[in-house]
Image (cartoon, rainbow, N blue to C red):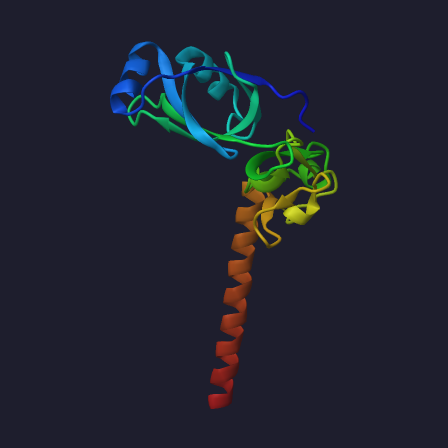
Length: 219
């Protein structure tokens, strides 16, 4: 489970609208807004370098943050959106939503595949093909898992792992109401190609045999 809630330090931003946002960017800040939680929306700004470092560290949108603004009480927030420059791919604006510890929220949580090395499929040269490296889960804001785990130690070539095979923490549920695929163990490319060739030969032999049988009956 997630440990201590990390801090996200921001400054209150005076003024709203495009002009104020552009000024914040010129000052080396990323403008944003905090909304929800039964309170009025509040414009904020976060130092560009600090936000960029957190984004590069990963899982920014899947993390519950303790928002700290001078002169105000700390509040738990989750990032709902980060707008980026279409050319430079750098953050230009962010939306944060206030949460109570007991609030339920949908988040994308990483999947960790354990035991792949040394599994029966791996020993035969199989390759684990990951279909979903992360899954959207319904979680409690105060108890967000760092990841979910799937045991691959018994996988054979041709086996498939589904969300039902994952070890989900208590109270955590997938947002998709079906047993979707997480990964599968595929045969090595050389073996797969050889099997395809064999299938084609077998099919041709059966077809030829049927054709001869038909011709014999016609005679």
